[in-house]
Length: 208
Image: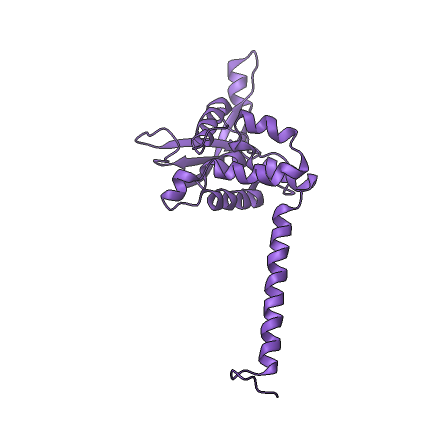
């Protein structure tokens, strides 16, 4: 080995240069990844994931967003929902992306497509404080009231309870939602209204 005048060795210098080169390659790859156009497949999947949070302007823009502008749109989407929460030490993006991953495993059979009502609720509100499964009777309409009562089907339902959720109306007993096995909500209009209001509450920077 050849000693370096400053006390190092030729091998040490070679190793340092190799590490430096690896670091530069990684940095360049990161820059390319950030600036490369977002593919149609990736864009469609991302839009479906975060669609519950879109406002009207974002919904319209996402439908015709050029590939070269998609990454900037995504960054702006998160930026519009983080300033206040970030100042309070809460990472909204990490929180929502974590919910999406969790809901994806629970409520999507193939990891694709729009959310069902269970998935939509989970993504916007997070995991409920408790969940309970129960059988519920489903009555069939007919001319004979007694026959209606006898001819019924039992259907498994699940109740989700959110206690004092900061993005829901505050009530002493909390807010609960009930879903069928197919993740269809009982009282869908009310659920949709509350989820839309909760999603809108994340928006802290208005569109320009």
